[in-house]
Every structure is written in structure tokens, then in C-alpha cells.
Image (cartoon, rainbow, N blue to C red):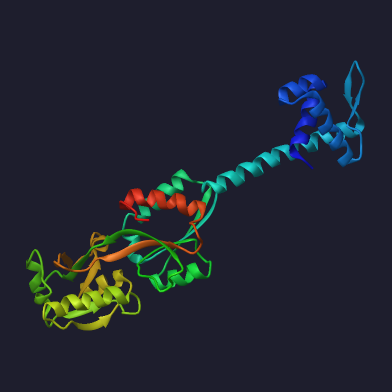
Amino acid sequence: MDLRSVECFIRVAETLHFGRAAEELHLSQPALSQRIRTLERDIGARLFERNRRSVRLTAAGHAFLAPARTVVTQGERAVDSARRAAQGRQGRLRLGCTVIASYTALPQAIQEFRTTCPEVEVDLVEVNSPALEAALDRGEIDLGVLHPPLERPHLRLRALPAEPCVLALPAGHRLAERSTVSFADLAGEPMLAAPRSVGPVLFDKMVACFRAAGVEPRIVQEATPVTTLAGLVAAGAGLGFVTRGVATATRPGVVFREVPGAPAVPMAAAWAAAEPSPAGGRFLGILARHLGSVSA
């Protein structure tokens, strides 16, 4: 059943005048009459009794009027819902992020998105980068904020500003008195690090920085996520690198120092489809404003 024809029926039923209804609907009177005849044929009953002097509803027309109004209202709502979903203003956004990402401006971006798009339900999961890749591949999340390079090259990627690394060390450590620390200063120090399997490229870059300074890193314990590593530093288990965002979270007994030449943690948004979902695309725009420029 054509919704436009149902709208035409309602207008004729309200005006009881084909000419006036055609004018209000911006149709010619023959076109309006044809729509009504087609509708009557589809229903299998006459909806109007008319002659040269008057138009009136039949019993079938009276019975059809209230449901017809409901159908048109529901149709308009369905069209509006579809349009809002296509614009990323309605629906659902399944978002994944790493712990490191959660210590950037990501939470503020999510808050703004929820405020500006209240009809989009946001589901948030926090796991490591390899797990986010797998979740994207399985279709469990729509968008992941993670750390390239990716093991699955078929995933789509948009680069985000990298997160600089700083050294976390106990407040009473001998190096805590310095404003900056070099890799050479870390010779023989017990180091904490995330497992290489979580971020092999960053792990190898960090080891290369040590070796370029003539130092072999002494990794005494693997720890993940990075917040756990900071907790182990506070407990005196060793020293370790964390992102600057994590360093902004106050942790008693731990100080943070710049290490010139330390690699940054790469950041990116990833998705599995040819393009981000409409809600995902809208969220990426907000995230770009909070984090800075986003590379295509």
C-alpha cells in the first residue's frame, strides 16, 4: 500500500472536497482521483460516495480513516528513524579501546558524543590491541581505538596522534632527582615491560633504544595493562615506561621523567567495513577535535 495514496485519502476525508484536497497536496485533481481509485482497488472497497454536489465517506471509508492516520504517522517515524540512523544520530555504536587510549581525551570525546547523539546507544569495551583486532574481525565491535601496526591488514585504519612515553620510577629512586633520564642511565636497572606479544613493534623499538645507548635492558617482570605496571613501580618492583596520559593520573610513590628518544605509542581508529558506520564516522569527527588532527 502506497503511503502517499493513504495521505491523499486522509486529506480528501478531512476536506470532503477533491479540488481543495488536490490543491493542498500539490496534485492535479485527475492524479488525486487516480490515486484514490487505485487505493480502493487495493482495499477492495469504495471509500467515498461522491456526486457533483458532495463527497462523503462510505462505511469502509469511516472504518479506514483512523488506522490510515496511524499508518502514516508510523511511516513518517520509520522514515525519520532511517534518516537519523544514516546520519549517525540514532542506533548503536559498539566501541572498543585499549587502556592507554582510555587515558587520552577519548573519554571526553565519548561524553560529547553521548550528549550530542543521545539516541545512539554506546557500548564500550576495554581490552588490549590484539583482542580489539579480533573483535573487529568477528563483527563484535564497530570501531576500535588501538595501536598499529595491525596484524590484520584488511582492517581499515585512520591514524591518531601518538602517545609519548615517559619513565615511571619510585619516588625514592636515585634517578628521581633528575629532570630527565637517559637510556644509558638505566644500565642494570630492573625494568618492567608489557609482553612483546601485546605490542611487538613498540617492544622492539624500546629495546633498540636501550641497545643504541650501549645498554642491554634487564626486564625482570612483564606486566599489562600499563596501569598495572605503574602499580608495580609504586611497589618497588622496578622501573617502566608508561604513556604521558597514564602519568597524568596521580599515583602515590611514583614519579615520571622524560627520556629523550623514547618511542611514542602509535594510536589509530580501526573498523572492518569499507567505511565506518554512520555513528562511528560521526564519533571519529568528535574524537579528531579532542585528540588533534586525524590522518586519512
